[in-house]
Length: 432
Image (cartoon, rainbow, N blue to C red):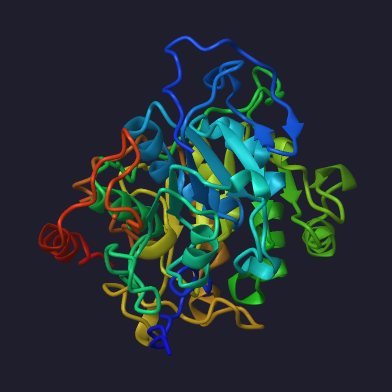
């Protein structure tokens, strides 16, 4: 019997459960139009020459919007490090507009699991890639899912239930961007965890000469990460009193929550964005790209604001921004976080992100704190060596191979010898 996996550390992402070489593409491929086919959605057609095929890199990240955006540095590292390979991302179909903005993926293979679980299977189009990369979780189910696609090589974190995978060790309390960059560095690719910006969408922004709205997003997947409705409403009232327009957004199933905020704040129905199914992702990207500021809990919209370079005030609790926060060097983003006596700000150990009530650390954030940040003048990016130490503001994140084949496909860097891999893992595994 395989040994049991180590206990999952609390906090989102720390214990997710959990699967044919051709000639290199020419340097000037002929363009084709994006399309949806049984083989996936073309999201970067200029890299797919007509009549040509290339060895594929299958990347599993079948999670949500924020998860995709925190994996952008790793996806960019794969694109730069393997320029002659087709990058195929296995992720939810609804993320296609964002994948296009990321601009380092050639094809989206629509796949998703129920309630963030590992998908039960991959489409037939995923079969026999030259390389499979697990950016989904620690394993073992995600490892096995990718292994069933029969890749030439598989890159992933080591898991004791899959001992044939000689990857680096999983570090429980590590920032999500740093984690996946460390994985790729172990396999020999350069990866920059701050390479996370995406291009703004081709969508209408604010009217010229007028400031964009302050976007309030009261929703989150679990009540633990939802700041109270009455506090969002109080922020909305004061922002309107200061002369700025306000838009309240709703994700899927969050329309009643957004409506409650708007009604308590005395906003017109036109201030609501998003129906029962939420706001389409492409419209959401356009709204955030043109916003003056976004006020949001620790959820996907916060990562979208970071990626688009839109000012944001992010309300953290129960999980520390040391694990999911924006880069400390970018002064456009404020992470409000009050760990208090029941948490250690140095270790960043999170509370229960799935609890059915707002976390105590989240409730320590006041309306006045949020308003002070929203109504302040925009801040230029700070030097990384001088993170904000204002009380309540967290200095968040700063930046400091599963080989199933002994002979990688042509063009892949060789996995490091075990001794070198262990040394690299000890050096880079001391993050938060």
